[in-house]
Each structure stands twice: as C-alpha cells, then as structure tokens.
Length: 264
Image (cartoon, rainbow, N blue to C red; front, side, top):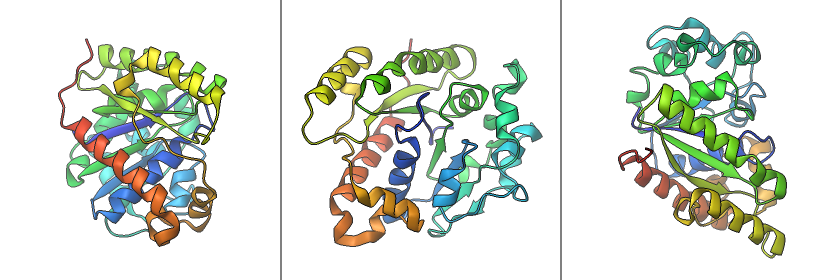
C-alpha cells in the first residue's frame, strides 16, 4: 500500500473530509488518478464527490464484511468529478463493523479488500471516521502514511495523543509500513494568540517538522465547493489561495510517501 494514506483524527468537526477532498481536488487538477475510500458512516466525502449514498450501492462496509482479497475492485465507482477521481463509497453497515471486537482477522480487512485494487491508482486517500474504532484501525492497517488533521483549539489538540497512540499500536501489531506522514492544520484564523499557543503545543507533541505548512485558512468557499459537489480547483481565480494551499500539501504528501517509514 505504498501509495495509500489514512486521513484521521478522533475528534469530529476538525475537517478530515475537507482535507481529503482538498487533496483530491489538487489531484484532480493535476490529472492524478486517485481513489477516495470513505470509511465514515456519515458519507460526506461520498456525497461531495457526486455519489448519492445508498444502501443499494456496495461500498466500504461491504468490502470489510466480504473479508476477501481484492473485494473492493467490484465496488469502486467513478466520482462525479472526472474519470481521474474514483470512489469506494461509504455504504454497508460501517457503524456495526466499528463496534465489533478487534480480533486479528478483523483489523486488516480493508487492506485485504484493497489488495491489487490500490495498485491501479497513483494515490489512495482513506477518509477515516471521527473515532479510534475498528474502522479507523482498518484504515491505518491499509495505509503507508497517516495524515493527522488538527484544528488549533484546546479540544482539537487534546485528541492528538490518543490518535498517535493508535498509529503506534497499528504499526506494532498490524502494519510495519505505517508512518506518520504529517499533521495538517485546518481552519486556522489569520490572527489568534490562542491558536498560535495550541500550534506550539502540537509541535511539542509531534515535532516541528511534522506540522506541515501552509495551514488551511477559514474560507467560505470550502463549504460552497462541498455544497456544489465540485473540486475547489474548479472555482478558478476565486479559489486561487485555497488551490495553492492544497497543491503544496499534496506535494508534501507525495514526498512523504517516497520516504521509508521511520517509526521505531
């Protein structure tokens, strides 16, 4: 899974899906063949990519339940963005699977489902659920990189340590290829002493080099792009600032995947 990244944080509302879709938008603009795996039962990424969530569509829940090598191959669909961006939709009983005991044969089901499928794409982005349950464990077990999304607030930073603990646990038990790719700061206000203090706290936790720049600013256009189910880059000059941010973040992500894992 050398091209696969899990985007995660245990706290909801920090913007994991925003980051996933922003990176997908940068990939769209660069004609990079990309697969989005929606592991969140809320299915926000699925909807924003132009696919209506439905129990009639096969997707991540079904891929996990199948417990079969390459199972996702029959469930991947083209997104509404272009034929460069593909999707394994959020469907099936994701919530039920998340509540199952973490047996050894249940932690690597996504990795098994993506076997041979991920090789057809230059990049695979896994949008994890806002929890540290079995589904997120599966996302990490299927990935080479973990991309942590953090909002620079008291509650946002507080969720970082448990997430780092899960990444280390999955590295130890399930996936020796896994590494922390980096930390993306989302919804960063232009001027805020509190936000800067929390960013300082975050750097102490993960190291300054792991906190990527530029941060993602608060912009109304992000919500509009999600509402219109369109890539941010498709908004032209209005999206120039955000497009540049996600282009740079995608560049860093690509570079991180080319580096050997460093966790010890």
